[in-house]
Image 1 (cartoon, rainbow, N blue to C red):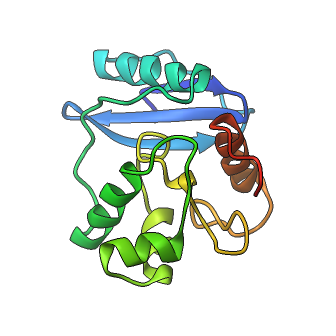
Image 2: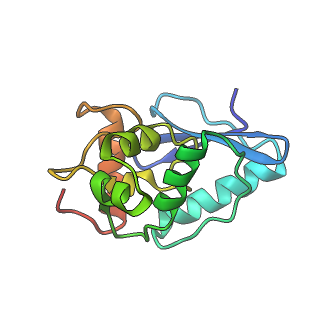
Image 3: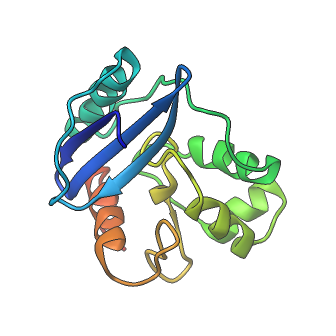
Length: 156
């Protein structure tokens, strides 16, 4: 099912590749079995993600599968411009791209390449906000908190 599954401080990260592109990156619970990378691209994705987990300022250079609507891709480009250690609210990002906060939030939640397209850097005006279409204070919110703290954002 995954081309690689690696350990992360908050659980596991699953990577799927297809036709020379990273198709999807998924946050998984710690109970998921590790999977050794089975392609050169999966191995490179693992290398770059592990580098980020060690050093938040690390950047990514992976071929990502073109997915999503034109609007989602516009939101994801906006997200990709947010540097490590910085955050924008859904409203701020919406204003930058000429949209509305709710639509931006939906596009953030549909991001197939989290970490590489750092949707965790988009937060609610009154706090951390949801993550990956999960608004509760469960596993995904803990992942978002860890990623932000890793990047030096601790006041959410």
